[in-house]
Amino acid sequence: MPPYHFARFSPPAARIAVAPVLAALLAAALLAAACQPAPQGQAAKKKAAYELYREYAREFPQVKDISPEALMALKDPVIIDVRSDKERQVSMIKNAVTGEEFLKNPKAFGARPLAAYCTIGYRSAEFAQKMAEKGIVVKNLQAGILGWLHAGGEIAGPGGAPSKTVDVYGEDWDLAPDGIKTVW
Image (cartoon, rainbow, N blue to C red):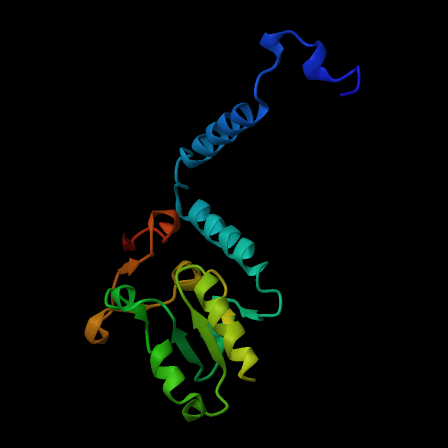
């Protein structure tokens, strides 16, 4: 050991194990971040939903996306819901098809524009990426069903009746606009 080594010349009290101290500091920082209040108000929730979407989208740079407004303006798009059965039993974007239904025969949908969605855009980006690997272009709906709702899009419950309830997958994604009940 060189003569200037810290452990050799420092008093025992100074030889604090660094790893436990850093772990405690990291845990405290994570706890503080987790205790932040959820965004309040429609504008704050919309902003938070789109920030989460942009964070997730960085993991899928090759996947093209589409805004809810642009999707609403398309004539006869195929909107693909890749969420779980549990989530879809609460509500879906009106006239959407399930991922399973689409995958049975993608060619059945012809040359219509394709867009996939989930709660916020991560699972639908994974779906779009897998479809791209098969040569099928599927765009990812920006901010998922939450973005759709913030843009004034309609959702339907079981049987097709209009709904004001959406399954947001978990508490972290409880960012629906005012007037929409969330479950998870």
